[in-house]
Length: 344
Image (tube, rainbow, N blue to C red; front, side, top):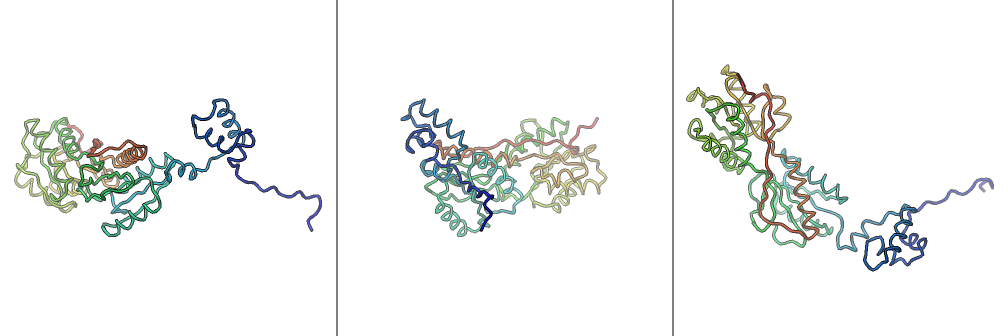
Protein backbone atom coordinates (compact mmCIF):
# COMPACT_ATOMS: atom_id res chain seq x y z
CA UNK A 1 0.00 0.00 0.00
CA UNK A 2 1.32 3.45 -0.92
CA UNK A 3 2.06 5.92 1.88
CA UNK A 4 -0.86 8.22 2.57
CA UNK A 5 1.22 11.39 2.19
CA UNK A 6 2.05 10.68 -1.49
CA UNK A 7 -0.32 12.36 -3.94
CA UNK A 8 -1.22 10.44 -7.07
CA UNK A 9 0.57 11.64 -10.23
CA UNK A 10 -1.92 13.36 -12.55
CA UNK A 11 -2.33 11.82 -15.99
CA UNK A 12 -1.70 14.44 -18.67
CA UNK A 13 -3.79 14.33 -21.82
CA UNK A 14 -4.09 16.50 -24.92
CA UNK A 15 -6.73 19.20 -24.90
CA UNK A 16 -9.58 18.23 -27.21
CA UNK A 17 -12.06 20.22 -29.24
CA UNK A 18 -14.71 19.18 -26.73
CA UNK A 19 -12.70 20.84 -23.95
CA UNK A 20 -12.49 24.07 -25.95
CA UNK A 21 -16.22 24.03 -26.75
CA UNK A 22 -17.14 23.42 -23.09
CA UNK A 23 -14.89 26.22 -21.82
CA UNK A 24 -16.20 28.64 -24.46
CA UNK A 25 -19.83 27.74 -23.77
CA UNK A 26 -20.59 26.61 -27.33
CA UNK A 27 -21.30 23.34 -29.10
CA UNK A 28 -18.50 21.23 -30.56
CA UNK A 29 -19.80 22.00 -34.07
CA UNK A 30 -19.70 25.75 -33.41
CA UNK A 31 -16.18 25.52 -31.96
CA UNK A 32 -15.03 23.63 -35.04
CA UNK A 33 -16.54 26.20 -37.40
CA UNK A 34 -15.00 29.05 -35.41
CA UNK A 35 -11.50 27.56 -35.49
CA UNK A 36 -11.79 26.81 -39.20
CA UNK A 37 -12.92 30.36 -40.05
CA UNK A 38 -16.43 29.48 -41.23
CA UNK A 39 -18.78 32.37 -41.98
CA UNK A 40 -21.71 30.82 -40.10
CA UNK A 41 -20.21 31.86 -36.74
CA UNK A 42 -20.61 35.35 -35.27
CA UNK A 43 -17.39 37.34 -34.98
CA UNK A 44 -17.65 37.66 -31.19
CA UNK A 45 -18.20 33.91 -30.82
CA UNK A 46 -15.26 33.16 -33.11
CA UNK A 47 -13.01 35.48 -31.09
CA UNK A 48 -14.09 33.88 -27.81
CA UNK A 49 -13.39 30.37 -29.10
CA UNK A 50 -9.95 31.41 -30.36
CA UNK A 51 -9.08 33.01 -27.01
CA UNK A 52 -10.10 29.86 -25.15
CA UNK A 53 -8.20 27.62 -27.57
CA UNK A 54 -5.07 29.72 -27.10
CA UNK A 55 -5.44 29.73 -23.31
CA UNK A 56 -5.81 25.93 -23.26
CA UNK A 57 -2.92 25.47 -25.76
CA UNK A 58 -5.26 23.55 -28.04
CA UNK A 59 -3.55 21.90 -31.01
CA UNK A 60 -6.02 20.82 -33.73
CA UNK A 61 -5.60 17.34 -35.16
CA UNK A 62 -3.90 17.89 -38.52
CA UNK A 63 -5.13 14.62 -39.99
CA UNK A 64 -8.73 15.32 -39.02
CA UNK A 65 -8.55 18.83 -40.49
CA UNK A 66 -7.01 17.45 -43.66
CA UNK A 67 -9.69 14.81 -44.08
CA UNK A 68 -12.39 17.45 -43.63
CA UNK A 69 -10.74 19.40 -46.45
CA UNK A 70 -10.42 16.27 -48.59
CA UNK A 71 -6.62 16.11 -48.15
CA UNK A 72 -4.18 13.87 -46.31
CA UNK A 73 -1.35 16.39 -45.85
CA UNK A 74 1.11 14.07 -47.61
CA UNK A 75 3.04 14.26 -50.89
CA UNK A 76 4.84 11.53 -52.82
CA UNK A 77 8.39 12.06 -54.13
CA UNK A 78 9.21 9.51 -56.81
CA UNK A 79 12.71 9.19 -58.28
CA UNK A 80 14.50 6.78 -60.58
CA UNK A 81 17.94 7.46 -59.15
CA UNK A 82 18.06 7.98 -55.38
CA UNK A 83 21.88 7.88 -55.35
CA UNK A 84 22.22 10.18 -58.37
CA UNK A 85 24.38 13.28 -58.34
CA UNK A 86 21.62 15.38 -59.88
CA UNK A 87 18.42 13.92 -58.44
CA UNK A 88 19.44 14.23 -54.78
CA UNK A 89 19.63 18.07 -54.70
CA UNK A 90 16.26 18.27 -56.50
CA UNK A 91 14.72 15.92 -53.94
CA UNK A 92 16.23 17.89 -51.07
CA UNK A 93 14.85 21.16 -52.37
CA UNK A 94 11.39 19.66 -52.90
CA UNK A 95 11.34 18.09 -49.45
CA UNK A 96 12.39 21.38 -47.82
CA UNK A 97 9.59 23.27 -49.53
CA UNK A 98 6.93 20.67 -48.80
CA UNK A 99 8.07 20.37 -45.19
CA UNK A 100 7.85 24.13 -44.77
CA UNK A 101 4.18 23.80 -45.69
CA UNK A 102 3.82 21.23 -42.87
CA UNK A 103 3.23 18.33 -45.23
CA UNK A 104 4.68 14.86 -44.81
CA UNK A 105 6.66 13.16 -47.58
CA UNK A 106 6.73 9.59 -48.88
CA UNK A 107 9.96 8.99 -50.83
CA UNK A 108 10.16 6.11 -53.33
CA UNK A 109 13.02 5.00 -55.60
CA UNK A 110 11.99 3.14 -58.77
CA UNK A 111 15.66 2.48 -59.69
CA UNK A 112 14.96 2.98 -63.38
CA UNK A 113 12.43 0.12 -63.47
CA UNK A 114 9.08 1.08 -65.06
CA UNK A 115 7.24 -1.79 -63.34
CA UNK A 116 8.62 -0.79 -59.95
CA UNK A 117 7.65 2.80 -60.72
CA UNK A 118 4.02 1.84 -61.39
CA UNK A 119 3.97 -0.18 -58.18
CA UNK A 120 5.19 2.84 -56.21
CA UNK A 121 2.62 5.11 -57.87
CA UNK A 122 -0.22 2.79 -56.88
CA UNK A 123 1.18 2.45 -53.35
CA UNK A 124 1.36 6.23 -52.97
CA UNK A 125 -2.16 6.70 -54.29
CA UNK A 126 -3.42 4.07 -51.85
CA UNK A 127 -1.96 6.20 -49.06
CA UNK A 128 -4.08 9.09 -50.34
CA UNK A 129 -1.19 11.44 -51.14
CA UNK A 130 -2.32 14.88 -52.26
CA UNK A 131 0.13 15.02 -55.16
CA UNK A 132 3.32 13.61 -56.72
CA UNK A 133 6.69 15.07 -57.70
CA UNK A 134 8.53 12.85 -60.20
CA UNK A 135 12.30 13.47 -60.36
CA UNK A 136 14.19 12.11 -63.36
CA UNK A 137 17.77 10.86 -63.47
CA UNK A 138 18.73 12.86 -66.58
CA UNK A 139 17.42 15.82 -68.57
CA UNK A 140 15.99 13.57 -71.29
CA UNK A 141 12.20 13.53 -71.64
CA UNK A 142 10.48 10.62 -69.88
CA UNK A 143 7.10 8.88 -70.34
CA UNK A 144 4.15 10.52 -68.64
CA UNK A 145 2.38 8.75 -65.78
CA UNK A 146 -0.85 9.59 -67.55
CA UNK A 147 -4.08 10.71 -65.94
CA UNK A 148 -3.99 10.36 -62.15
CA UNK A 149 -6.49 11.46 -59.49
CA UNK A 150 -3.91 13.85 -57.98
CA UNK A 151 -1.68 16.59 -59.46
CA UNK A 152 1.76 15.56 -60.74
CA UNK A 153 4.82 17.74 -61.36
CA UNK A 154 7.89 16.46 -63.23
CA UNK A 155 11.28 17.85 -62.20
CA UNK A 156 14.68 17.76 -63.95
CA UNK A 157 13.48 15.27 -66.59
CA UNK A 158 10.45 16.68 -68.46
CA UNK A 159 7.37 14.63 -69.29
CA UNK A 160 6.84 13.72 -72.94
CA UNK A 161 3.25 14.94 -72.58
CA UNK A 162 3.00 18.74 -73.09
CA UNK A 163 -0.19 18.75 -71.01
CA UNK A 164 1.86 17.81 -67.93
CA UNK A 165 3.82 20.37 -65.93
CA UNK A 166 7.60 19.92 -66.14
CA UNK A 167 10.30 21.95 -64.36
CA UNK A 168 13.79 21.83 -65.92
CA UNK A 169 17.12 23.62 -65.75
CA UNK A 170 17.66 25.92 -68.74
CA UNK A 171 20.64 24.14 -70.31
CA UNK A 172 20.42 26.15 -73.54
CA UNK A 173 20.57 29.35 -71.49
CA UNK A 174 23.38 27.85 -69.42
CA UNK A 175 25.44 27.21 -72.56
CA UNK A 176 24.89 30.79 -73.64
CA UNK A 177 25.93 32.07 -70.19
CA UNK A 178 29.17 30.05 -70.34
CA UNK A 179 30.21 31.39 -73.73
CA UNK A 180 29.21 34.97 -72.89
CA UNK A 181 31.23 34.81 -69.68
CA UNK A 182 34.35 33.86 -71.66
CA UNK A 183 33.74 36.56 -74.24
CA UNK A 184 33.40 39.20 -71.52
CA UNK A 185 36.72 37.95 -70.13
CA UNK A 186 38.36 38.85 -73.44
CA UNK A 187 38.47 35.35 -74.98
CA UNK A 188 37.80 35.04 -78.71
CA UNK A 189 39.11 31.60 -79.77
CA UNK A 190 36.74 29.28 -77.95
CA UNK A 191 36.25 25.50 -78.25
CA UNK A 192 33.57 23.26 -76.76
CA UNK A 193 34.28 19.77 -75.39
CA UNK A 194 31.20 18.00 -74.09
CA UNK A 195 29.57 14.65 -73.38
CA UNK A 196 27.38 12.07 -75.09
CA UNK A 197 25.27 13.65 -77.87
CA UNK A 198 22.41 11.27 -77.14
CA UNK A 199 21.86 13.24 -73.90
CA UNK A 200 19.62 16.30 -74.14
CA UNK A 201 21.92 18.16 -71.71
CA UNK A 202 24.89 17.86 -74.09
CA UNK A 203 22.89 18.99 -77.12
CA UNK A 204 21.17 21.86 -75.30
CA UNK A 205 24.39 23.24 -73.81
CA UNK A 206 26.08 23.07 -77.22
CA UNK A 207 23.14 24.95 -78.76
CA UNK A 208 23.56 27.74 -76.22
CA UNK A 209 27.33 27.95 -76.67
CA UNK A 210 27.21 28.14 -80.47
CA UNK A 211 24.35 30.67 -80.42
CA UNK A 212 26.30 33.01 -78.16
CA UNK A 213 29.39 32.76 -80.37
CA UNK A 214 27.34 33.46 -83.50
CA UNK A 215 25.77 36.51 -81.86
CA UNK A 216 29.27 37.79 -81.05
CA UNK A 217 30.52 37.10 -84.58
CA UNK A 218 33.02 34.51 -83.34
CA UNK A 219 33.72 31.07 -84.84
CA UNK A 220 33.76 27.90 -82.78
CA UNK A 221 37.34 26.64 -82.87
CA UNK A 222 37.48 23.48 -84.97
CA UNK A 223 34.10 24.40 -86.52
CA UNK A 224 32.34 21.70 -84.54
CA UNK A 225 31.35 20.72 -81.03
CA UNK A 226 33.50 17.87 -79.71
CA UNK A 227 30.96 15.35 -78.37
CA UNK A 228 32.24 12.35 -76.47
CA UNK A 229 31.92 10.88 -72.95
CA UNK A 230 31.04 12.36 -69.55
CA UNK A 231 34.40 11.62 -67.96
CA UNK A 232 37.90 12.98 -67.34
CA UNK A 233 39.50 10.63 -69.86
CA UNK A 234 37.53 12.18 -72.70
CA UNK A 235 38.42 15.65 -71.47
CA UNK A 236 42.13 14.79 -71.53
CA UNK A 237 42.04 13.15 -74.98
CA UNK A 238 39.88 15.84 -76.61
CA UNK A 239 42.12 18.61 -75.30
CA UNK A 240 45.24 16.99 -76.77
CA UNK A 241 43.47 16.58 -80.14
CA UNK A 242 42.37 20.20 -80.11
CA UNK A 243 45.81 21.62 -79.39
CA UNK A 244 47.42 19.39 -81.98
CA UNK A 245 45.35 21.13 -84.65
CA UNK A 246 44.43 24.48 -83.08
CA UNK A 247 47.16 25.76 -80.76
CA UNK A 248 45.58 29.23 -80.95
CA UNK A 249 42.77 28.28 -78.54
CA UNK A 250 42.36 30.69 -75.64
CA UNK A 251 39.25 29.24 -73.96
CA UNK A 252 37.40 25.93 -73.55
CA UNK A 253 33.80 25.32 -72.52
CA UNK A 254 33.70 21.87 -70.90
CA UNK A 255 30.32 20.13 -70.84
CA UNK A 256 30.69 19.04 -67.20
CA UNK A 257 32.99 19.45 -64.22
CA UNK A 258 34.32 15.92 -64.75
CA UNK A 259 35.25 16.66 -68.35
CA UNK A 260 36.84 19.91 -67.21
CA UNK A 261 39.09 18.06 -64.76
CA UNK A 262 40.47 16.10 -67.70
CA UNK A 263 40.89 19.31 -69.70
CA UNK A 264 42.95 20.83 -66.85
CA UNK A 265 45.12 17.71 -66.66
CA UNK A 266 46.06 17.91 -70.35
CA UNK A 267 46.65 21.67 -70.25
CA UNK A 268 49.04 21.15 -67.35
CA UNK A 269 50.88 18.41 -69.26
CA UNK A 270 51.12 20.71 -72.31
CA UNK A 271 52.51 23.49 -70.09
CA UNK A 272 49.53 25.71 -70.95
CA UNK A 273 48.68 28.11 -68.14
CA UNK A 274 45.12 28.39 -66.79
CA UNK A 275 43.83 31.08 -66.93
CA UNK A 276 46.99 32.77 -68.25
CA UNK A 277 46.85 31.12 -71.69
CA UNK A 278 43.49 29.34 -71.72
CA UNK A 279 40.35 29.96 -69.66
CA UNK A 280 38.18 26.97 -68.73
CA UNK A 281 34.51 27.00 -67.75
CA UNK A 282 32.34 23.95 -67.05
CA UNK A 283 28.85 22.86 -65.98
CA UNK A 284 27.17 21.39 -62.86
CA UNK A 285 29.09 23.31 -60.16
CA UNK A 286 29.78 20.08 -58.30
CA UNK A 287 31.69 21.53 -55.35
CA UNK A 288 33.80 18.42 -54.67
CA UNK A 289 35.24 18.72 -58.19
CA UNK A 290 35.08 22.44 -58.92
CA UNK A 291 36.66 23.66 -55.69
CA UNK A 292 39.30 20.92 -55.49
CA UNK A 293 40.57 21.53 -59.02
CA UNK A 294 43.77 23.50 -59.54
CA UNK A 295 42.93 26.17 -60.40
CA UNK A 296 39.40 26.12 -59.06
CA UNK A 297 36.79 25.82 -61.80
CA UNK A 298 34.35 28.46 -62.89
CA UNK A 299 31.15 26.46 -63.42
CA UNK A 300 27.53 26.91 -64.50
CA UNK A 301 25.28 26.09 -61.56
CA UNK A 302 22.02 24.35 -62.53
CA UNK A 303 20.40 25.46 -59.22
CA UNK A 304 18.97 22.00 -58.63
CA UNK A 305 17.75 22.60 -55.07
CA UNK A 306 15.87 25.68 -56.24
CA UNK A 307 14.44 23.56 -59.05
CA UNK A 308 13.11 21.12 -56.45
CA UNK A 309 11.66 23.95 -54.37
CA UNK A 310 9.95 25.41 -57.43
CA UNK A 311 8.50 22.00 -58.33
CA UNK A 312 7.09 21.68 -54.81
CA UNK A 313 5.66 25.19 -55.00
CA UNK A 314 3.90 24.39 -58.28
CA UNK A 315 2.56 21.15 -56.82
CA UNK A 316 1.15 22.95 -53.78
CA UNK A 317 -0.48 25.46 -56.11
CA UNK A 318 -2.03 22.61 -58.08
CA UNK A 319 -3.28 20.97 -54.88
CA UNK A 320 -4.86 24.31 -54.04
CA UNK A 321 -6.67 24.37 -57.39
CA UNK A 322 -4.28 26.34 -59.63
CA UNK A 323 -2.86 23.93 -62.18
CA UNK A 324 -0.20 24.64 -64.81
CA UNK A 325 1.02 22.74 -67.85
CA UNK A 326 3.94 22.82 -70.25
CA UNK A 327 7.66 23.18 -69.57
CA UNK A 328 9.03 25.80 -67.19
CA UNK A 329 12.81 26.37 -67.39
CA UNK A 330 14.80 27.65 -64.41
CA UNK A 331 17.67 29.98 -65.32
CA UNK A 332 21.20 28.82 -64.49
CA UNK A 333 23.96 31.01 -63.03
CA UNK A 334 27.72 31.23 -63.45
CA UNK A 335 29.81 30.69 -60.32
CA UNK A 336 33.10 32.45 -61.07
CA UNK A 337 36.38 31.02 -59.83
CA UNK A 338 40.05 31.22 -60.77
CA UNK A 339 39.94 29.24 -64.06
CA UNK A 340 38.39 32.16 -66.00
CA UNK A 341 39.93 35.15 -64.29
CA UNK A 342 40.87 37.89 -66.80
CA UNK A 343 44.59 38.30 -67.37
CA UNK A 344 46.34 41.57 -68.12
